[in-house]
Amino acid sequence: MLGCRKVQLVTGRRRIHNPLGKVNQFQSGPSTELAYVVGVVLGDGNLNIHGYNAELILAVTDYDFAKEFSASLATILGQPKPYKVRWHPRKNRWIVQGSSILLYNFLSRDWRNLKKWIEHCSRCRAAFLRAFYDAEGSVSGRKLSLHNTEKALLLYIQDLLNQHRVETSRLYLHRSKGTALLDPKSGKVYFRRKDGFSFIVRTKSLPQFAKEIGFSIERKQKRLAEAARGVMERTLISNEAIPHSDSRGL
Image (cartoon, rainbow, N blue to C red; front, top):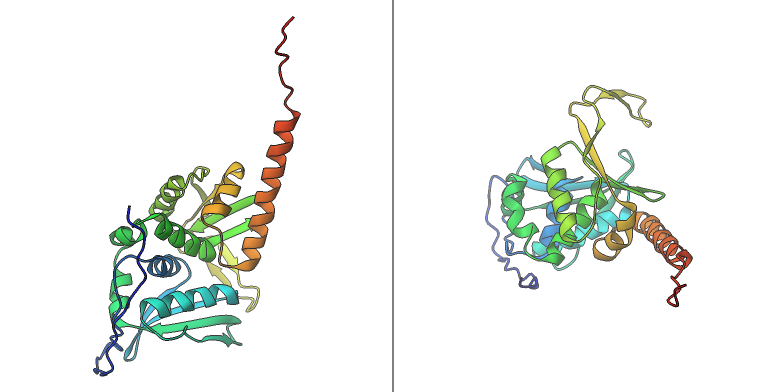
């Protein structure tokens, strides 16, 4: 499989009015940056037609996540520097916002039609998985979980993880449709409109996940590294505790 080439973009100086917003041409060939953006949009990102702009928006609590998305988005849209990461006091979130009708249309298609870009090479797969875990993954002790409402998408992600030799549990129902959800900030109660599914990375595969995929979010990456180190140390101790057979016999 060929490796990813560096993204090279051509953006014209002449601005053309478009009722759907800026054209902002991008190179649609496979790249790790594009794979990362795809993963983010399928996770925490939002696509939105707003006025004259076709927007790509990310609103998250982790600055380093927003920064990584900003850099990747700027690269595939040929911007000379990353998009601004701004703090929104009312939402209590870091916001990244870009605009491109071409990229908007590209990302609006069903995720199954994006497999060519996700699966282009091992680096693209890893970038996509890292983005999705940045958005939807959580680490607690030695438990690395992934949650989403789209069952088929999670099954696909399990298959991608398997290609990186990362073993996972079976997929299970995490939250049922109709269960209550309390917003701790507003105090409002919401009811889930869809079932939520989840799976975990098997403990023995945590070091492999850390090596091949990892997180862009520092706090999650630190927890993952600690968990992976614990697994490796435990494995080493177990191996040393196995008695060697006496080759002399009886």
